[in-house]
Image (tube, rainbow, N blue to C red; front, side, top):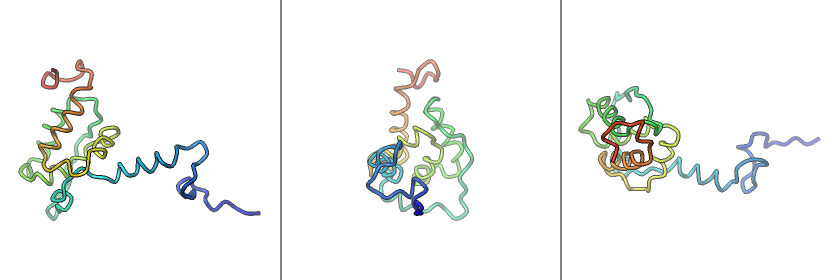
Length: 140
C-alpha cells in the first residue's frame, strides 16, 4: 500500500491545485504581496540601533481614525522621532489584517520617508471609512 507523502497541503506538488483550495496562482500572488516591500533601499538596508526594542502598541485594523493612529504611533516612538528610517521600518508591525495587506501591496520604492508612508496610510484609510465613527480631522 502506497502512502501519500504529501500529506500537508503546503507540501502538495507545485503546479496543481489543491482540491477545494484556492487556485495556486492566487496563493502565489498573495505570498508575493506579503514578501514585497514599498520601502526604498536606504530604509530596507537600515539597521536599528543596538538594543532597540519595538514599543508595545495597539495594532490598526482600518476601523478607527488613521490620524489618531499616526499620532499615537509617533508618541510611542518619541525617542526615535527624528529617525525616519526607523519610523518606517517599525510601522508595519502596528498593522493587522487588511491594513497589513494594504501595506504590502504598495508599489516597490514608493516609500522614501515617514511622511510618504503617513500620507499613503491616511489617504487609504481616511476616505472609505464611515465618518460617523471617526473624529473631525478625517471628515471632508
